Length: 297
Image (cartoon, rainbow, N blue to C red):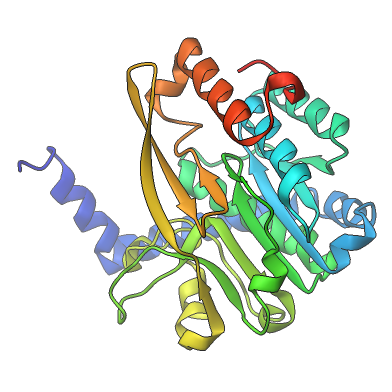
């Protein structure tokens, strides 16, 4: 297969130690600046969370897709038995932020709009949003267990994440198959025992030099230190939903969480008819019908 023009140059820049170091420094400066914004707001928001959040809390980073948050918040209401959901909004569109905030209010889900994100890369934007969540929210709440789910990754049957993590440090889907390779759980479905990571300089940014996507920055500070008995690997399988003549690729984790995949960026999601049919299918199949739906896709 012919590689796209310019790929060799991009690979060289990404893996050359000097250029990679310069890029990492640039990314760290942007991350630090973003993390410092809204620090007091995060501290105050942490005090408003329900008491159950002191035991366990799950954060979802919203991004421009209100109908996905509509599904997630209702699915969480129906099926999560052990931890409150919190939505932090990384949306770039004001209208989306307003709609997502209203959905969360109606479902009694704690909501906070993040500072405007300066990153153009979706992976880095997500990474620094996760870092903001960890340092400006999780570290103030200090729950026994915390985790992150993508806005298009939601439970489809009752699930007790805390129970699955009993005695473990990390729970998630390990995407890298080679046992001796750097790895990180997929950032859209990962959970941690806070007392075992407290004091570590967690970093949810990508690490291109290790071949790791969002969350890969935790390889050096956490994942490489873990033994097999410290990790609960989520079972994973893929399937395809044929919707409106398109094939929607989905992931399933432990037969309990469905991930639609690329809801923010997939080309099919730009088509209103496709979004409506997919949303209808999700509500009718997993959530007891469309009567619970708050917003139209």
